[in-house]
Length: 66
Image (cartoon, rainbow, N blue to C red; front, side):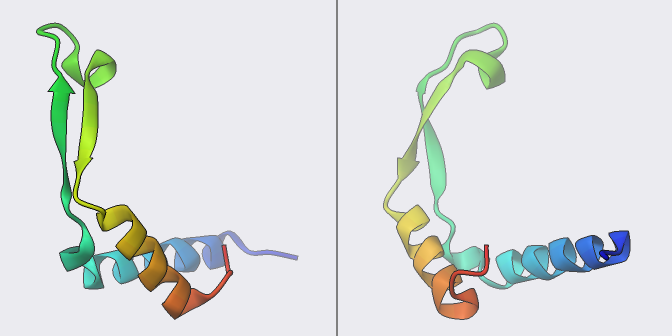
């Protein structure tokens, strides 16, 4: 049986991990930015390959625990 508190602890642990590894996160750049509702209809691309680095670090720290 699970506890809702265990889910909250899990999320808190992963958010803390993400904060501790925030230097790995690069950014995004607009490629298409409409004037209206840009956050819904705009398009972005990643800057660098930070996603792969973040995933690799996650696997090092947690293995396949997703």
